[in-house]
Image (cartoon, rainbow, N blue to C red; front, top):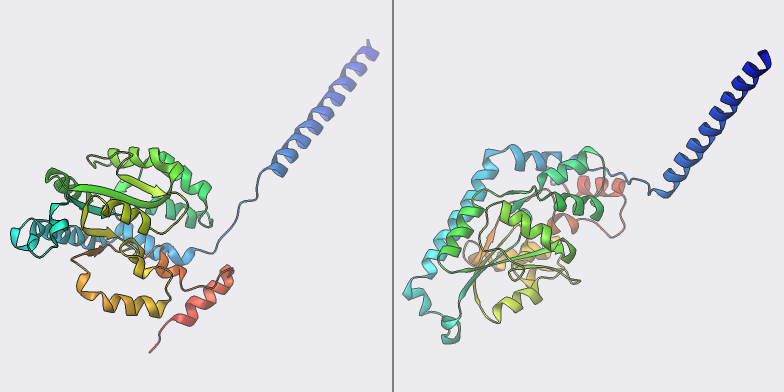
Length: 282
């Protein structure tokens, strides 16, 4: 009887050891196949994200941009403005070209997630956010774009989201309240990040009354691939076009404005040093 109890106890111990071994080996193997989570020093972005999410001033600036857009669109319908255009342009139907991210949709929760988890921008998290279809509209965007649609103005959503995000993007725009959204007027990036080819595609059939975006690159190829000093000079040259042909929305979270501050391949530590070096002091 004692021998049976001994054998039974021994068998349970062996079974436990074997099970623990296989669980340990399996867990280790799974961890080995999973990519390491990258970390980033992006705490400095907190102020910009909170400004977008919590500052009434940000909402006011967004409403201001869309109020200006409505005034400019209404003015374009006046006959005296049409007389100033070349005859071929007068016959083309009107269009408004708008960026998507931080222009009509608010992605600040996605940026907040990256900061909270010390993660750099990456397509895995970005695609996952897009698939949620949870981005809310920028204040004023739905009212203006739906008003433009009511006046038979074609809206083109031109974004550097990747083509694989198209259906999720269309779904999100519709759920946010934008009217007349389809695969035909949502033009995403398919290789080239420059929006100029897509701009020309629109201009072949339509007259773009004005463009709206949070980045200078959203408005003209003339602003692309330029240094900080060049961008200042380019904006000064085009100063009369802002509020008329180019309508800008604020975005301090990210953009070309920040990218041009750094050299290619800089580490987070080097970027911190560069930001501190660029600060203008008394």
